[in-house]
Length: 101
Image (cartoon, rainbow, N blue to C red; front, side):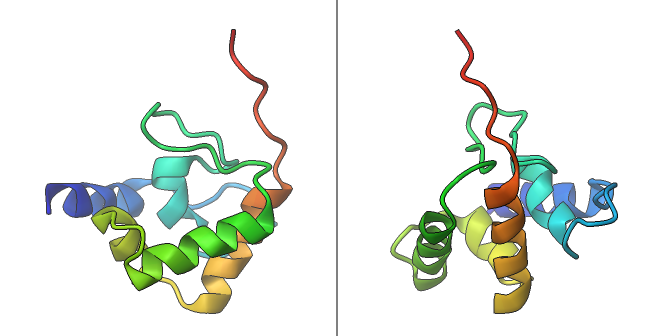
């Protein structure tokens, strides 16, 4: 439960996306995954450059409970399907971060 509350709080504290072309509610995901899909915390996956079909499948698994991570289910509960898909498309279009040595 602490994870869910921490992520919800972070989402509201994270500034709204600074780019005009960013999808609405990107800040909800950017709190953990970064505005451009480059997570600042090692435990959170980078989403930039990920395959869109993979991202859609992952979200479907979180929504169905097949992937059980309370923070993701809580965040997804605040997004309708169109909002989530716009955010996934945004992340898929962002350049992937170069691998660190």
